[in-house]
Length: 330
Figure 1: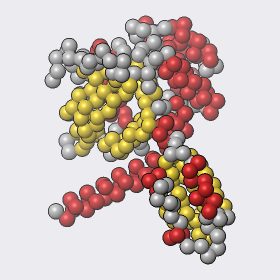
Figure 2 (figure 1 turned 90 degrees about the horizontal axis):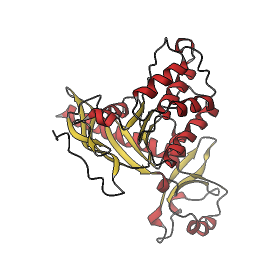
Figure 3 (figure 1 turned 90 degrees about the vertical axis):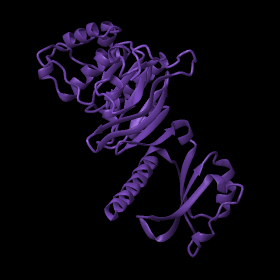
């Protein structure tokens, strides 16, 4: 284990705020997280995606020092977490997915308590956030609705001026208008130069605020995706003329590097011939080719995180099924 003064070199402006190397958490024969290596740049909003039990919460708790890794290392602000988790937690404001608040206290007292606990706590800022969220701070926690308690937890966490925010399902139990306000707070934190790790099941939220996202599945980091690259990808659904042969739908060689096509059955027109074309890059070079196909109908849409999420699930489940079959036959 590294000494308490073991730090990642932060002399470069590109130094990551969070870094893990082969991070692993194992319980007996079960891996909650396995060989996870990632780097979160300073000032980035970094998304975590994955189904329940994928390893997201395990990763967050390892970053905070609430769990001790079986193998690998994690660094926050250049400090190795396992060596000095107390120093790490001074740098972090954390919203857990199951935030618990003192039920006997009023909302304003809760904010005052957390502002005093956190070295960079800012009570006035927390109060302003609570007012923006239209939260009644005179009410005791025990008499607050689930949504009100979520707003209170957000005000406490977002009020602290730590360099790193870790938000686990921050918009859970909130109505759509309040969700938009929370996302605005996240964008403001990034504008202030802070780093945000944002875990959510809501793909649209990840797409709106994150610059990068990783997909976790069965404790494995299955995919890393930059959102600016994803926004260059599109899916085209096209209906061919009657009698057309889909096997002849081939892009010119100079375009084939960025096009993947496949047969597609539209649920609302199962008897017609459709194709699905996934493309990466500028659409302009494709337009002349698409026009030459004499398509009857065409719909162009951003590929989006949903397609990537489904792809990750499909590939990972296929690999898991194959591994299980091999193990069973051994």
